[in-house]
Length: 253
Ligand code: GTP
Ligand code: MG
Image (tube, rainbow, N blue to C red; front, side, top):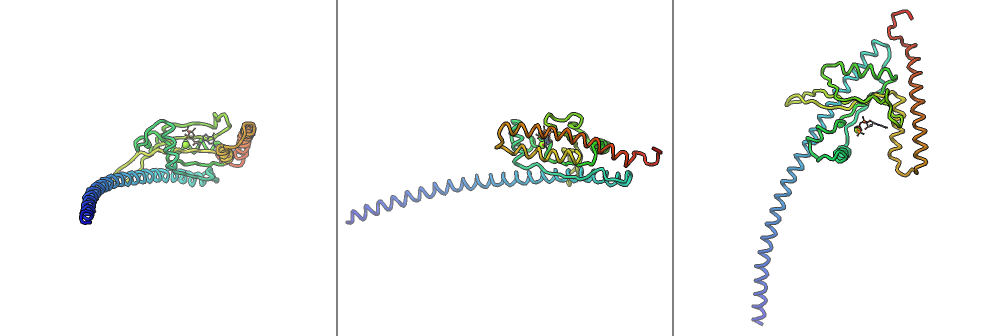
């Protein structure tokens, strides 16, 4: 009995020793895990705050560009008695779409790559009543000395194969923050109301994954037809507008 007890004790004693060893090992692991977690939390927090800071800066850039278009529209509405800009929309690229784009370009996910390789994080879309307003307004923006044109794509003079029309520019503009000035890139898309109407419907088509080949081809052909009709209507509307609002109203026609 005694021996049993002692044996039990012995066993118990061993178990206590083993438990003590386990506990200290577990504590050690827990301490390490805590350290790792704390450091990765720090990293996560610092990444999150760097991300937020970057997005805030792009939002500020959007505000600057929007304001420029609003000012132009206000001024032109007095000069020409009509509002050439029908609407201004803006958006910040979603984190998912930023990461997808980096992945498509085969780039690592770094803040540097996001800033230097992705040019459409800040996007401003300007909807004009008439096609010729697009070029005038783009020109007026580019004449401003704090705007630098990086690239442009004229999908109006050279529409895409599917019929897409719009005028795209990537511009850079300084934004002033507490720690100095930063050059920020903004993608500007200018299109007419009709082009925008077409682009929204065509955009829907990209998300319809369950269409069979024949239907998809038919819809694409219909859309191309509509795009050409729309371009024709845009031209006719421009002609009517020119009669209603002559460029130089004081001159005899
Ligand atoms: P993204 O990788 O989509 O940004 O294109 P990109 O870098 O080649 O630039 P591009 O100037 O061709 O297109 C930029 C944006 O214009 C797109 O993100 C869309 O918003 C719009 N866009 C371009 N092509 C089409 C099109 O065929 N249909 C529609 N609906 N929108 C288009
Ligand atoms: Mg884009």
